[in-house]
Image (tube, rainbow, N blue to C red; front, side):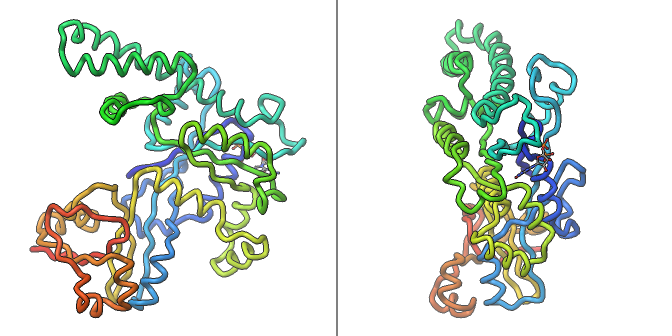
Length: 365
Ligand code: GDP
């Protein structure tokens, strides 16, 4: 399963945020495919559409979909020099599919900051530098292989050579791979190199309790937003401390608490949704009288593969996918009406599943 890794310097609020994630935790019995590991937190993906479908279909059970966050521990500074725990830090980042980079935007004199002063851009750059140095090493190694082939005028090697040159140039100027300008074809080559700084990233600005209602007033948050805009990255503002309190509440209490604070959606819920998208994940639904359920798939897959997420037999014996979009179903009011209106499509093996599809799979056993 794809996972988003939580990284950050010490004392920025990572553990507090990760605790909120595990507290809010999903019923793991429903998600047998998920990893059981103290460094992995399974979260349910909040989705209003699932509530609406439940109202329409009135099933016995409703099951949201879930995915995993990974807490990336380890020492950051000096990591690229390959010193013990630092090395581990890099290898953990290698294993995740996207990065949630937590930065400290709260002021609290009682909690020391590793650099002595609060400067979120400095923090971001400390970590990024380690990742950039590690990537530079990967690129240099790759060069040695590709150079020879490029000299023999091998076409693929020549194209890769250009990409590597551009990467080397950028990385040497302290730029992450994701911040560089590549054509679509070049980007495909970059992806195959599995660099650390080409992984999708979002920044989590951790603000203090009294700033969560109006984070725009926090100058650090503004700085992080400006920085992130350069990389086309998103910034999610949270107060980790409040999130860990919210995570302990039951659903109704949580709603009340948020209302009192004057916020619509908890920072954690926003983070979950944004990370899900960052990973390229999307949701389809099954809606029967027994169970209404959300399923996670990777964008771009075809109907049989999507069926296989429920059960391998569904994929093997796939016949067709009776599909209606969430919007059409809600507008029709019920499955029968949607059928009458001709909104239920019979899709075959080549159909590329879309976010929000409500699907009934037909298959041979
Ligand atoms: P980590 O080292 O990045 O995992 O940081 P921790 O989660 O352990 O947090 C470091 C310290 O900062 C702890 O004492 C937390 O209680 C405190 N802290 C974390 N988030 C917040 C916050 O939003 N506001 C304030 N005031 N303190 C926080």
